[in-house]
Picture 1 (cartoon, rainbow, N blue to C red):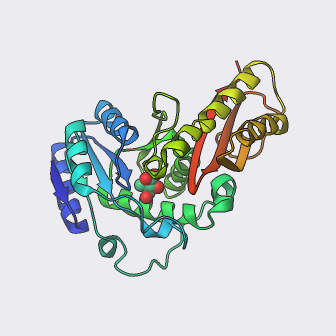
Picture 2 (cartoon, rainbow, N blue to C red):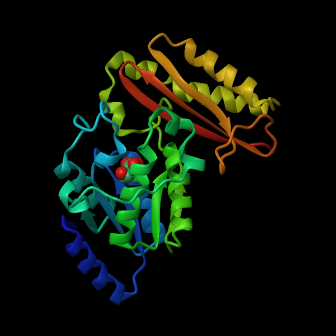
Length: 282
Ligand code: PAF
């Protein structure tokens, strides 16, 4: 597997690949890879001839006081995992390479980015949109893959790419989970053993919400109240938000008719975790 750290190097390799006509899938990451990322690589291999990945801890999507400095970094481990999963190129640029100067361009998708996590992390999705737009411009993949755990992120990116007439297809792939249901996340590494046990409350809450919809609950507010009560039952957990929204528009659903996305953010100790479930009403 090639490791490239410069924009020019990635562009040159991309030009060579273009001559072969091979289709390219791309998995952007911030490293600290886990099974969720590797599942995206494997899915990419089923959709394209080659999969490239990037590892870049993007400073513009972290607010002051968030975990940018302590975000886990181990490029050698990530390289090995990506190679084993079948990726053929790892793009691992420095901050200077991606941001040679502060960006004067702001990419905002406020309709989708301002609610849910965006309400608690102002500017976060602007940073995500900016870096993903840069990476897509550099790599020019046919397909880019994102995990459904970060549903709002994926929907923001899909809309940004469509609005910018980017030819890339954005593929949202199922959330990978631990055996006890906890969504795989690089931030799970922050959890102390007791917190790790308590973190199962997120999945439990989403299962409860799913069961409630299947049993006929059609009020978004009642669903949110049930979910909030379940999180409140876990002493180590503190609910930041739970919302029953339209999965495409991310707007609150007073009445659930076709489908509902139940999304939540919970602090377990000092660690903020997110998860969601999409429930189809049959
Ligand atoms: O989901 C992530 O790891 C990041 O937000 C992304 C998409 C790689 C952009 O930095």
